[in-house]
Image 1 (cartoon, rainbow, N blue to C red):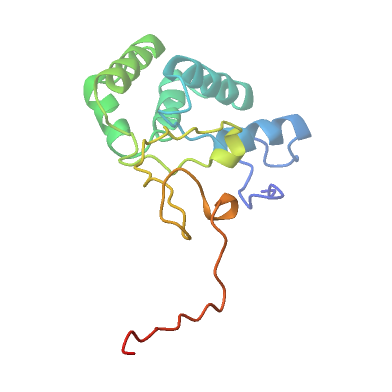
Image 2: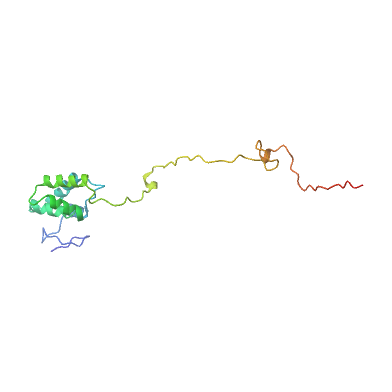
Amino acid sequence: MVNIVGLGRKNKSFPNEQMIPGELKMDNSFAEAIFNIERDRPMSWFLKQKDRLTALNTDMSETMVHKRILRKYGGDLEHSIRSICIEPCSTEDYINAMEDITTRTKIGRNWYKPPMDHKKSGKTILKPNKPHYKAPFKCHKCGSTSNLANTCPKMARINEIEIEKDDTN
């Protein structure tokens, strides 16, 4: 058997020949495709995977194609689809069951949303202006609220020494 370069898997469909580049790319794309509820639509994803598998393995039966595609769902989603569709089922039954499960339940969804990176999205987030209390401005020289210290009409008294006068004469 011949090893496929890159993934280290063996080519089972053609034991004496290597895969042509188009088939290798299609096989890699099927191997990497995993259903994600937030990103993929059930019908288009299922049909795309079915087309990839039938193009790679023309002699594979429809039930084997369905089994290999169902393995790509993983976990609870795969189990719930298998419990609804008892084999042998058509492609239409699998797609209908998958759409029902993904729209009506939260099976297969993430429990938390990943943090948003606003730098990548390009959206600017405007924070609402909060009214905050401002104390009235006061002059430091004279103490009035009508002017500030830089425009105060009273002159600053620097180094002024007050001398007390005695009235005891």
